[in-house]
Image (cartoon, rainbow, N blue to C red):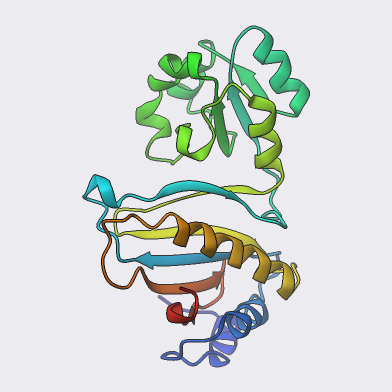
Length: 230
């Protein structure tokens, strides 16, 4: 893959084999975010889990103290009084059965998070093939299947993110924007790491955090020393 001049310059600041302290890694990832737009800073955490085993799965959600810097579009599946409650709380879209063909047939996906009341999960379940692979399926563990739609919407708008293992046992999550201060990114990062360590499955033996890498959208990866985080 051909890299641009800016990427190559940014990469020179980072020593490939070095495991950096949290503060230094955040400083470097900010410096290497040199694109013309406000890049997203992401964390990629490789765990010692084996996601093929049900007792080694990790899935949850955490509210980042400074949010992600991204405006999140929320779709709520609800009916009756819960429709008005969701709209009053600031949901971008609210509906029920009538949304199924729009999502299934027309490919409408103009939303980032889906919340559903438990009595609507039968409807939402029919969208599993579409929403599942995109990580948009509501889930009680992530707080997105709930009767308290106001709290769910407020948490998401306040910076709640979901984390889960992918097929290679890595967790990928946004931490904020390159325009955030180092302190804001450090707060968000520590909150995320604390939540993931707390979610460690009892069945996982040995080192839990195998590797932690911070990157910006267009920038090189910066490795954080995982042993200093556990």
